[in-house]
Length: 307
Image 1: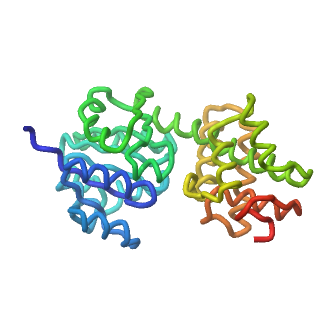
Image 2 (image 1 turned 180 degrees about the horizontal axis):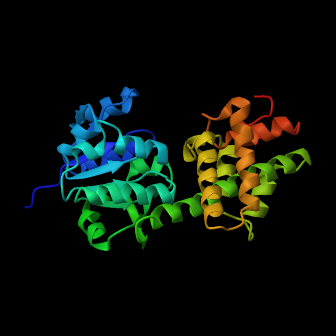
Image 3 (image 1 turned 120 degrees about the horizontal axis):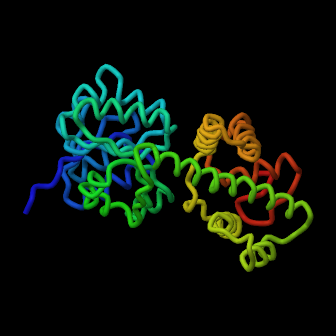
């Protein structure tokens, strides 16, 4: 049996922990980067992972390196800093970037990795931390099909859907479009729910009507589950990250150039939520924020405007 690739993992946060855990459980030796948030790092170490003190040290002992950080500034920092990835990256290594990033930055990082004689795929994820822990993420990939096929067995440990989108940068481009649709829909749903509530519409009636017609969506059903059952575990995504992702989309649209009237309005909605002090809370909090602004009462446990 061929020896399994040595995996390096940078960014074992809300999404990254589940990904790294599933790779580890699939029998791959894995090294994670030290981080101030010790809980996920310590959990992985307790289950057999090793820890590196710098990105350079991690890269030097890895065949495949995963990046799972917040966005382009964090990716560029971990790649280009003095003790960064490029300082330790070995020829023929593979870098897989799970982050949500700006395509122009993606091309810059890919070029630097290629110059080291290594390979880069942008491979952003969709779905939630719940699916990350369950090993059921979906991936959209930009880069070489040959390299994708080489790492497919690793990807099978934490994903059930892998779509090759095109050349390097295509994965991140599709991710921004996907997140605009998802987070834009989320903002629209929150606004509609609050308007319906202020008009005296019952939430169960709203759910039954919408779910029976063309306005139905996965996102609407998530919000109804949160509203009527109080289960927020199905949508753990911070408002400040939603703001960042929509900004990435509007920046990409402007660079093309392509109009983004609706996206700009959605971006302002998330800026408002962050400016009111809720940036670190999850997107469903937007229902309560809009309810407060509009003096509306939501009729489900855990979502009252007064909370």
